[in-house]
Length: 346
Length: 279
Image (cartoon, rainbow over all chains, first blue to last red):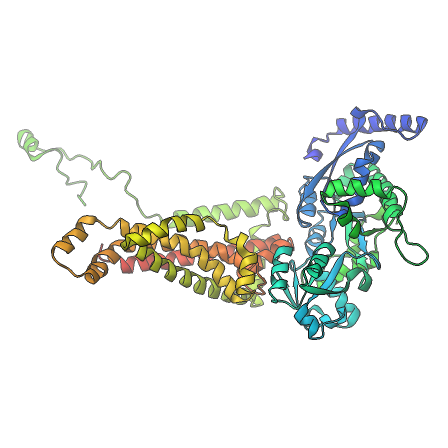
């Protein structure tokens, strides 16, 4: 949409504008520049706390400070966001990494430019939950999942990969478990409560609810077992080519918010317990408003982010290799070719 | 069919006056349907050629609209590794069993509603209340009731097929000409004979038209049914290709589904010709 309107003249005008604005900003220190000089950009997000840094950057005006007028487009499933970026409906996207994401990237439609959240020890995001029956029959720890029936959302989802890396850690493959794809979490919960599967991989809120209902037992957390790169910030290769300054500004604002988020939510004390950092309550309110959830629920499932937006490149490579071995991503894809980490200097 | 060259021009009376009748072209039959067996094929071939051309020239991105050649390659791959047959077999079983269950139930209830006014008084509001419920919204309940095995898939398709069959059956029986039934009654035919010889044959065209609709509904619902933990199946295959953003494979799966729809339609036409010979 926007790209089509970027003729050379407007490009020159806008970069000139931005240049003047930047000079002015440098002269008087960081402060919001005049409204008409703002570059328009849009970002596709899910209403989840993993998109927290984007909400913070928007609410605290970090995008405006960089000279960007950023619109947030809310999506309901992780699969829609990369599609919207590929089709040009939004300029940027932040979501979880799935096989579908890598297939779009393999076709040259999207490029990863920075990290989103990651699964990290001590940050409970996704749980392995066993039914009471399976638990009584000896399913007591994540490594016991070999040979069991596990409900997931879809083939190629983040849950599918989490079973994959769990297997890599404990010496089994996804062929050794029966994955039951049920499309969405409500159907997974129904199959779990009906005793149709032995275990599910569930987001923390769902997992805690199942335990509270007395329907199952949490065996462990993916973050403790297998830390991995859950999501990324990405854009279209065309946007990087034709609107590089916009991407640079966006990433700068994003990193400012990431650092603030990290300081508030991700810092541990000497004993390893999480401590509330500066601005904890204010930031929590921003995320709770954006995700339309109660602050205490948001606080229980805040993911870890790298303060410098650095990606776990080894894990991204492992993800691509895993999907390729499953036959779900083109074998010819070189994982490094879909990364452009020049914006975060990694 | 009158022969155009020898058609009498006016009434014979006019011919008598003139003595020598002028041959006049046959003017009727202007909109009579004629068979054009190649027109559909040619239009289809042209469409495919345009589509392929647009992709080759670069008008359509292969991601958003994969060219027919890519779809063909995906289809050939499915045939080569045997996954096509594996998926088709699983889906055909589900469609077959689900459709048969739904149709049997629908025929029975529809027949009852057609002949017994008490059954109709009870049935019509119930059908109106339950028919519009989207079966997809009930999937979590179906999982709890029927599990995630084949039973819930049969149930999804069966429920979808049941209600349209009920409606088609009872309205087909309703539209059997009353005078035929009254005549049979005045001749003193027993109830069973009226049902067998007048009501059922008379309702058959309407019931078969209902089959055409329910067969398509079964095909649509197989995708919904295979959302429930299906490992194989053409619906599961299409869902997976969509999740993986493999657009060429996705279209190959869709192609298989529409071929399935065509085949079922052709089979039903054959059945109609056989069963409706009396017309």
